[in-house]
Length: 130
Image (cartoon, rainbow, N blue to C red; front, side, top):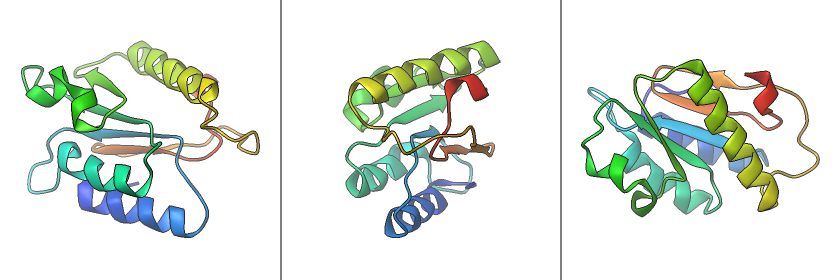
């Protein structure tokens, strides 16, 4: 769980150092008084080039939302969104990860954690857990 981008970077780097990884990261584009997703994704992607990262924001006219792949994100989730939209996004991300062999078979279970700003899906999450 993190509240803003610098915490996300630290948590991600610590997880990698401990031999753990996250299957999916969802970041807010902008965080009041903190680092937003557009800045944080650069360092997260540097630590893990294969990270599946989603940017989420209510600022639909922001260039990052329109060109999310150019900024290092794998998908976009405009706010506000319904739980079904999040579920669909997770299903698509899981299918993408599986087809690209990004989720090792050793990851099983259904755990993930959420905060208002960043969602770090822990190893073993499944789309059915949402």
